[in-house]
Image (tube, rainbow, N blue to C red; front, top):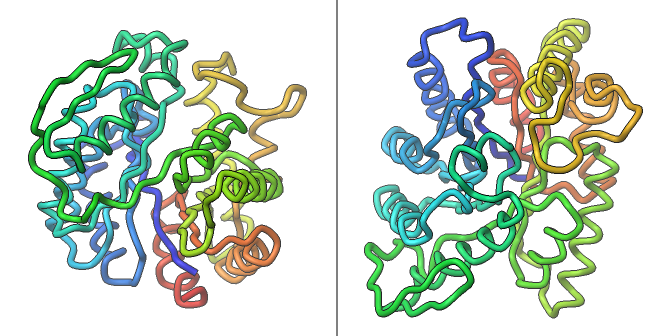
Length: 330
């Protein structure tokens, strides 16, 4: 089983100097490189203390400079908010500077504040996302780019640099909804699976993806399908529950606001269900290292989990993950 880490840059209650958030993240990335993690996947968000990393490509350059073998993933580049040629340039440059270690994950975003501040109409998010992905891939492979689309028009543009990995870095699409999964499978893209669905929901989505992929003439063989899971680990089960609850409250309040008024596009949790309790009961893997390890192995058997993308909810969770859980899964 491959293990990656989904690195958020949370700034809860702004308790520390902002520079400390980045320093701690980079220290973790160095540990990942030493302990056998496959990749760090950097989370991009804007205009919120939920995660204060507006440029995964800039931070990815620092991560590459501090590591030797760790792959540098984006989870994700929020494609609708970029000019596609600028995005193609930045990711290609990161791939060159990292010695060909980029995993490119792209997504369309969901936070209302991001669409409003960047001036992107939410109803255009899907078309802009898909068009941007197509342009980026063609910019990496075409000597001179010609493109006429709904949002962009280019004529004989040479996009440099080209990525170090040929024909381009491996590519994943963030896909949670059925429509997103259908589109990704229909195009033959591998997918990144979200940390906010329950294990059983992820299993249903994973099977649906495999069926649609096969129906479109593509094979799942040899693909890495990272499945993100929030984890809260402590030496004592009670402490792990406390970490999980704190993490659930942080996520729910960040996504829904303190009064649970939606600040995201689409549904967040089933109607009539307390979202925090749902995270505790169905979403977050929490407990001692042995218990969390058992849960991961259970998911491997039940839903075919072969690439775990962990999002630790505390520094202790991260350390116990790398020191006690990772060796068991390797």
